[in-house]
Length: 289
Image (cartoon, rainbow, N blue to C red):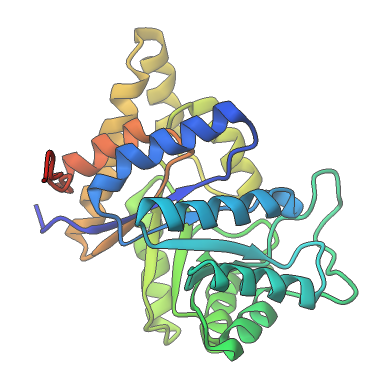
């Protein structure tokens, strides 16, 4: 197996006391794996904007991790959005995942705020002009639900890089070939900046399949069949660990050096997969005088 990769983890901000404990349990489990960064999401329609800001500031201050804050264009003016970015900077955060963002639930689609950013590229340009942040963006190995034709996702990613993005993180996918084809298409389009594959260890297959349908990620039939069989035998967790490990191993064999894990604030599977591919926890120093 190739050398162990660098890793990063995505968390989402807690919306209850119980969820707060779960987030901190997740951080405590995964922090020893020495991630190069961790990111904190925004909810659809900007619904967790304040929670994200609080979680980012607290994580940065308390955990010692390199925290990247998600920032979207949804339902906010340019001044409000850049004000949030300044707040991140004042809290010591120097990395942002810049996204257009999902429209609010129940809406027919994304509608820019009359005084807001129209798309991710405008947001990236404004953030780049501040000179304050390393900027990551989203990428889509499977076609985005709003993509207009073949190659649209690669073209749009190239525009994001031209606007000033430094790296991209992909939406999750379930077969290595999906990412490898996308990586080849990016290279053919002249994209030479890092495109990091996003990996989702499957905690609950039915929920994952519904989420995948909403965001355009292809669920292969063989995976549907495998989880149906595993559910009958009570082997879902074993199957999920094996499939995520196999996916990561195939990516590493093809030269991938960094993996980004969508943890869903449930760290067990992610920890087990990381260990299976050689990412070992750092040794903690105890009882140091």
